[in-house]
Length: 229
Image 1 (cartoon, helix red, strand yellow):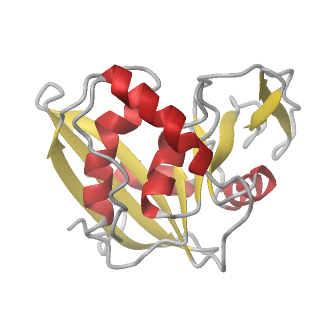
Image 2: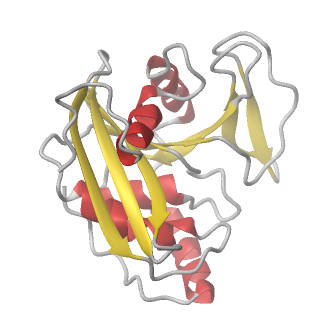
Image 3: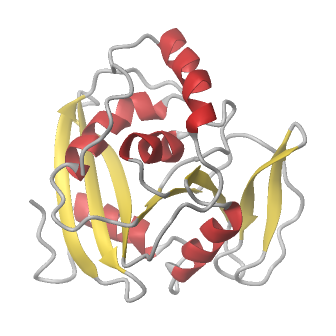
């Protein structure tokens, strides 16, 4: 899967913010998604005291949620850690990993923000836009917006709003467990995003896409055919 060359990566934080404001208008917030047979998750970490970015991608069959492909890629880290600008730090390694996949996903569930971002351009939206891939932001913490109490039942949610705009949903994936922050990434509506996140959740808080990607990145593989290329 080849990424579109929408911009350069050698940017200052100020230039990166300006680029986010430019790109956010290209994010598609309605469903433009076909049959989903494969879903992907991404895990990003750092090595050598932050000098190297490591990206792992797990592709699972859907709805079975069985691992069908996985890759690991490393890139020199070229951008500083700046909240709200993580895509400029992480995405080069993620795109390198996507280029190595043999099984292409139909949908990406990214462990990060989509439009639930101060400039409506989190990493799930940025990567989805670069790959022209339907994507969903599945974040463990809130970056922007406010919300009311989250109902207690599994699958219940409450809107996440910012300046009068609904930018996501706070979703209870398990009873008595902290909720997740779900938002549109690219080419997926919020209702569709919620549907697929819950369809990828089993008995854990996080969807299996995120769990598999983290497992692969950490070197903990529970099946002998889970090969990282």
